[in-house]
Amino acid sequence: MEADNTRVAHALPSPLCIITDRQRAVLPLPHTLQQAVQGGARWIRVREPDLALSAYAALCHLLVEAINNTRVTWSVRPSAYLLLRSVWPELRLGVHLTSFDAPWGATHEEILTGRSVHVGTNARAGIHEDVRREVATEVPKEERAGAAANVDTRTAAGESGVHDERLDYRLLAPVFDTACKPDTLPIGPAAISGLLNMDAAPVIALGGVTAFNAAECLRAGAVGIAVCGGVMESATPHDAASEYLHALGQR
Image (cartoon, rainbow, N blue to C red; front, side, top):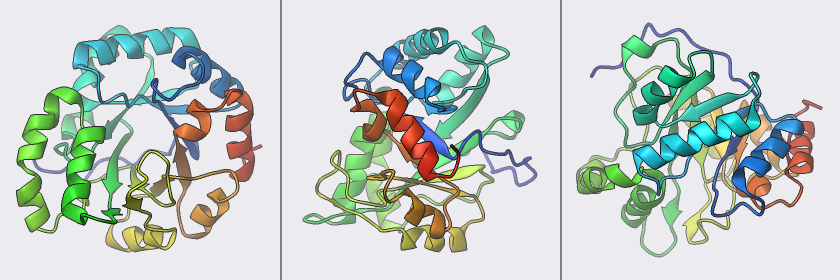
């Protein structure tokens, strides 16, 4: 499907996007997100790539019911969007694409849409191995075989994850050192302006972003940050979310 260049741009729900990882969460995931929302979080991306579609959709239902806040925007897999929309017609619902997903169709032009851009390289094996790691950790479980089969072709073609499509944001990672990918070299805040020069979509910085270095991302041109471990691994997600928002000038 060809990209739709007439798509209406959407304002981002918040400069802070919380990315879920139930396996890293210190508290049960619903409790973690409840507290983060109480701390001011208004944008949640449900990631959980190890879950099959049915289990993923069930988790989304559980989380939406637990948070029960109409001000929260949920960014979900494209394959889960219609399943969730049919049950939650009034939900603030967006779509987040991995760098291996096809462009989101023009029939969904009213939906907040973003895409991951992973451009870090492996310190020992180079970009080829890093792309394979992305397939293993970012692409939903049932879609990995097809994505992995295309890695060699995409790498040989020099694809960096930037597609000719209209997006509301790009999620760029890893900007700083991150514990979840210890062998991956961070690209640094300067890469934010580099991506902006390639594409007009706003950039959200991900990977090792803390309340102390978030301002560096904003100075480099990012419109916001995305965090996972900083909230998932906190025993006080309310305070963690509040500190991030304060660093972003939102509190």
